[in-house]
Length: 121
Image (cartoon, rainbow, N blue to C red; front, side, top):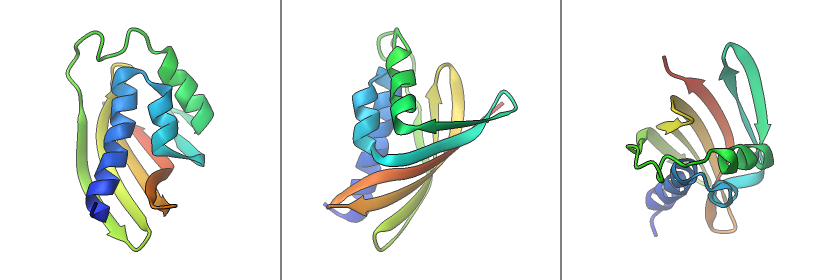
């Protein structure tokens, strides 16, 4: 598979995890040491992959179960060697996020190593 398609597959797995409230997909898309950081209600929020996956698992019923529209829009994507960066608009917990994702190729798999998020108004 071409690198761009592999990266897009990882991003889709991440978005599917949010949409389906599936923490296992979050673990699959992220590097175990990844950090998730951004401002939530004006306060700096920092998460590990484990805490993000737990939060995702707790969102029940999921957007998928409620048949809500899915949002996973790749705004930009660039790749250089075994690194990549993407800006993705997605929906979670009834909010629209603009995520800046840094990805790495590890053992032939692309994984998200860092996520900066912005909650859109």
